[in-house]
Image (cartoon, rainbow, N blue to C red; front, side, top):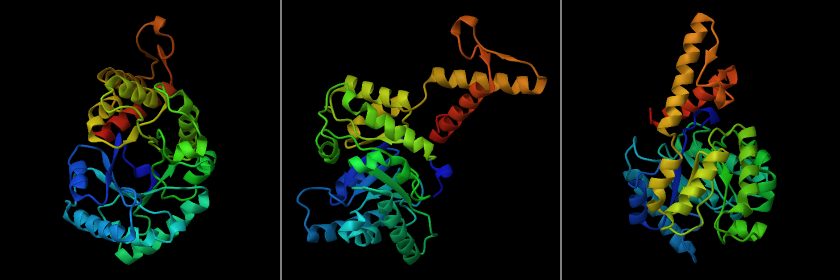
Length: 309
């Protein structure tokens, strides 16, 4: 999968790979993508339980339709465990978009997974490069090297910061979660710029750390993520999907504005005239320049890829 071909994902919904009912519910919940977890769907997770989970996931994937439904990713054990190949053999196939790679420390970790994927894809009869890599940045080293990690393999198609209240990223950085999440704004912003500089079209953020019934807090969180440049987020419960999808979709007003700029520019290109939009008081883009038109058309392309126009 090339980076230029990826689709925007507003929601990446995690589901435990050892629970068939949960996976099927997540698949049908309406998320843009699901993430089947084989790394740590629960704790403790013994090797016999892992073997059963792999068989379970392979059976579930075989039952899903070839087309339609959410994109499917799987989180597997990292290469240093020596167990990655076992997990990959359970999930790799034409229905799986990519692999979420946890516990990354350096670009070498991504290169290692890339090499393993070459072997598993060849074994499965898939084209080399079919499967995307989705690095999850949950160590200080990975946050520091986000750009280099994104550039470590052309398979890296999605990427974003891993925000959690008390998980691996807390261990790495030591922040304390607060309602307005100021403590992670730098981390989210830094990863976003690194991802965009590396050509990641649609960066995805980590999870909402608040209560499931805090609609106001969730909406504020999603709005800030969208405002700074994220196009979606990971989430652990389908109850959050409605607000997440609403915020990470263009508004009617945005679509109208972008469409008007596009239409005016198209007409002006034919006539060789200057494009004027709105009133002088609005400031920038009253006199429309090439950059404004380019932004409008890029945003319209995002809306088309989301299927909202």
